[in-house]
Length: 412
Image 1 (tube, rainbow, N blue to C red):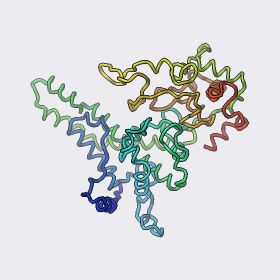
Image 2: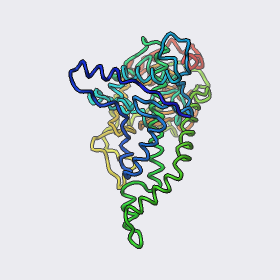
Image 3: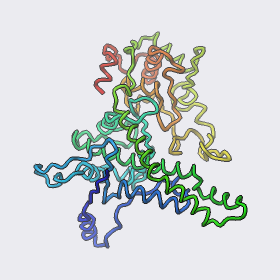
Image 4: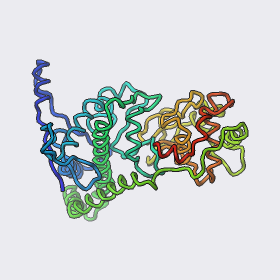
């Protein structure tokens, strides 16, 4: 079930009137670059599907399949904006456009008008990939993770804290961000399906060249689109169901990375064990942390001096800029651990989760249950990482080791 919500153009018209210029074009969602690789006919099908199921920035469509609170009608509310169903989606959109769009873009593509001036670049929500979360490696972030980022910001970046907006306002923004991410994921899934069916321009050219007798491009495309159209409805419903389930799963308690054992005290012995793990000096424990973060933790390991291959390129090509890159193909500098700035949070349990599960969208892997098989090993490494800014003298937060790790998780 889809419900359409329309935003009046009053504010756009007023802005045009005050500026003395003609009315600017309405806001639009932009396509993922990958979608542009499809033949025009398949790309048009993607656009039509997105418009039908999600609408556009001024005419939003609420697809009830997804775990988003769109807002039931509140006819008794003093605010007339809440009298009709879908008010939360509309208010979330308005708040996002006011507070987030200038960095993250109308589409959530991380390409707002100020994005090019920022380093690191704002997140592209459309990939469905979020770096800083408490959930297991392959899962989406929990709602609590998104709430925490909005409340605390991301240290060392231009992402500020919005805690003063209040919980209700933040909840509206979070649901709209999730909606943008879901829309982007549906687009990516359609691209993947159509590309697998042969709807890339290069595949169509090859099919024409290899056909016997020689077929016209129009006939090859017509046959291809007939197959795609016949399966389109089932494809969309199936992929949407998978995406919805992924977001529901992220909010389950068992999806959160919860240490079994409380944190080991940051004693000199624990810090020394962590140092050896960091430097891969313990047999069978090749964490290779220093390869990226450097032997002294300054983010200058040998991996930052290599030209890395671009994933998925055939024939293989390498990035033109030396060093690591993230999933968005942007340069990624490993954290300088001597600064004591941790973008995913500085609580010991936050560092534990980064070590356990890695950081999605980056080349930072997870070691929990593989290289590091016990909580004690992970806590030793946590203690060492937190000691680096203090020259190994003591942990950055020695007082909180009395708290049970599960209590830390509960406070999250």
